[in-house]
Amino acid sequence: METERRVLVVEDERTIAEAVAARLRAEGFTVEVAGDGPAAVEAARRTQPDAVVLDVMLPGFDGLEVCRRLQNERPVPILMLTARDDETDLLVGLAVGADDYMVKPFSMRELAARVHALLRRAAKVAVVPAGPPTLRVGDLEINQGERRVVRAGVEAHLTPTEFDLLVHLAAHPRTVLPRERLLADVWGWADASGTRTVDSHIKGLRRKLGADLIRTVHGVGYALEVER
Picture 1: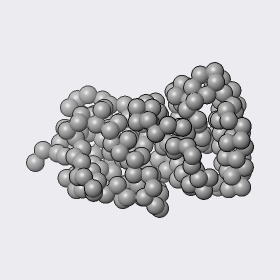
Picture 2: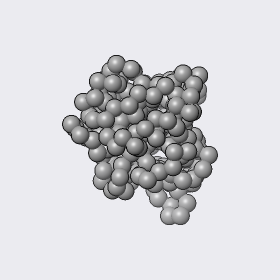
Picture 3: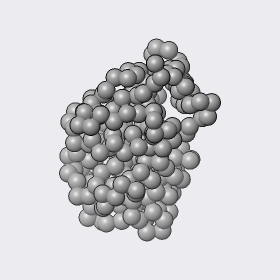
C-alpha cells in the first residue's frame, strides 16, 4: 500500500524541505530528510526509499551526482527539483537516471501527485509485460522482459522512463501520439501540465537512438518512424 511507502526528500533549503516533508507525510508516506549530497547517499542506503525527491543544487556534491550514485547502487524512482528551467540541466538529470523533474516554485499538490504517479509506474514496471516479449520495429529491437534496447545491432542504455516511453511509441508505429496521451499512458498523469517532461525524454531517446527515429508533429505530439 502507498501509505507504507518511504520517500527520501533531499533539499538544503530547510523551509522547502519541511514543507515538502509535511505534505508527503499528510499523504501517508514515511519521510526522511537529508540536506546535502553525502547525507542523501547515506540516508538512501540506510532507509531504502521507494522514491526520492531530489534538489539539483546541494552542498557536498550536487543532485546529479546523488542521482548517479543512487541509481548505480539500487534503482529508485527520482523526482528532481531545479530552481532554473535550464534545458541542459534537465537533460543531464534525465540522462543520469531521474524519472521526472519540477521547476521551482511548484505546488505541493502537484508534487504529491507526481510522487504517487512515480510509484504507480514503478509498480507496473515490476510486472512482466503481457504480449510479445520482444518488439521489433524496423532496425529497432526491444526486449520487454530484460528491458533492453538494440538499434542496428548496437545496444542503448535507457532510463526506466525512456524505456517505457519507447515501448509505448513502438506499440503504435507511425501513429502520432499526443503529448497528453503519453503523459496519461506512460507517466500516469491525469492532467497535461507536464508536456515539457515528454519533450525532454524524447530528446533523450533521440540522443541515444538517433534523431531520425521519432518524428515531431508540431502542436500535436510524436510518432515512431520506421521503414515501410
